[in-house]
Length: 343
Image 1 (cartoon, one colour):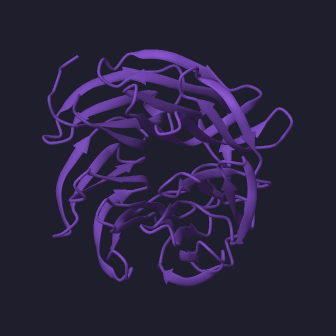
Image 2: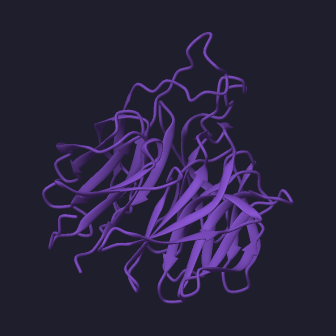
């Protein structure tokens, strides 16, 4: 392992069954950790300096996979060593993951269980045991976003016609927003609006969505859609910077005639959309490569990081100038990312 005094970007590379550690300032690779299962999304626990890596599928993707995995790996953020593997059985298919250090909890969405129900799992961060399961009555709960005090979680679902609202204190679903199947989701600063990417990306065997592509802007109090920010192509990852800018990845796709109908579509190069804080006016679009499923930003809000599942790299974008300043090679299937502050 090569040490660094700088912040580190950890990148889950699912097809390589690895996590790549990059120096956030220079882009240099510091280390690579091999895992037994494909990692999907990552979250950093600042209290214990641990990384949680969800393992969703043995291989494949949501609509065409070789079975869901009931595992979450726990990695030391400084030594880059695997320190624990949490078995979440009877639940399986953990996807998005979030650490709440104030309440010493870890949240993850799960796509299902032996009994069929998915939802949100609540884990005790100290013991790595399941504290609770919150049903969201949805098919394919996938990405989610919490408000600033983590009193509410908003859950997007691949195959349901709504996004769910979860009351964290009471551990119950308290509301729903009528939407087509959804992808990325984020709560905007002020906790008064939520942005959701829709409709869902579908394989060739399913009918094309009838709803137009775009970002649904939702009033967090009334749970009504107040605006739709149109997009010509599929919007996917949704992320908000510390400065309030909204970052959204475009993932244009096409189905190749005669290909396996369950396979991932082909992905031409996409763009990163940058929206102004508050007004959500489109500032511009930046090329970022094909199939970007995760977007993150630096703690100062100046740089965006976009991981490409297909081209196996991370594109670094200057958010103010809208310039690509770096393209960093990682490993196959670059997906989830998290930033580790310097120790």
